Length: 394
Image (cartoon, rainbow, N blue to C red; front, side, top):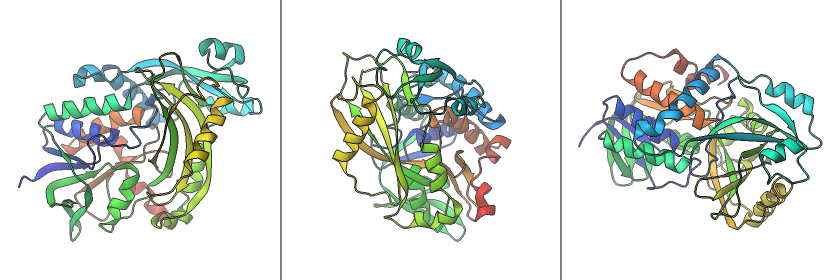
């Protein structure tokens, strides 16, 4: 049996990009996922590229590299990613603290500018709800998540990469070294394993006795049927996003052990009302975020749908009644908003790439840098993303 240079576990955006970049460096790579088209966080994401949002040297570098990569990615891969640039509208509610929001947005590389309700509605005629007093706006990148993964996958296979549909049940550990993966049928050997399984990464690594500070929300949204009679010109999100505060509270070191037990709701759920329309005219309307430990959790579907539609009615009323399907998927995050990328402490032969906040802007350059480091090109930027940065808190 072939021993691969790398086995990549997970075919969301992370695994698709990393496997392609590793293969581009001439390495033999096996990409494994349980499903041919996974219903994962990538599948149900908005596909936004916030290249304006860098706040420090590290994130500003990644944002600049990320948008540069996206602008030529379709040509590089030879397949269409549906990249475009459009206006992002960050809606301000009547009772939001405008000065506090302006101060918060001032820290970004390209601060969004405030526009009043009339200007916001001129940019987005569907923005007629009573919960909108104005908006911050900035140019924003956008792709189809499904198209990007498909493009990476096709380019990966064209380079000689191997895809396999199988459920990975664990990793093979011999003393302090990982030597491959386990599926229900057999083991597959590799020089190194990259776990790119998002919210499932913590559970998978636990099978080898490795604990990592990766957490997840259960995100809920409505995916509509194609609605060619509607034209949403912009990407709409709230200016006061609650998800980042929720993630900070849910990943505090003192409650880390709760994430190893199913059934805990670590923090109350929140909703951030937003919408995006894709090129085929379907829309994503969302989203509710729950911090529920365990990857299999029940949900009151009808209550969630009503909550989503009610929130959208205050912002984009004409979209709030569109027919569609409710979806729920786990979305990984880290303790400090930056991804965990690189080798894991205490065990050889295994790397992690998960916990992306803003994956569509950060991931393409990180995947490229990771693959270059894999063939001997040291990278100080990746050192700053090492999972080992949290060891002092353990």
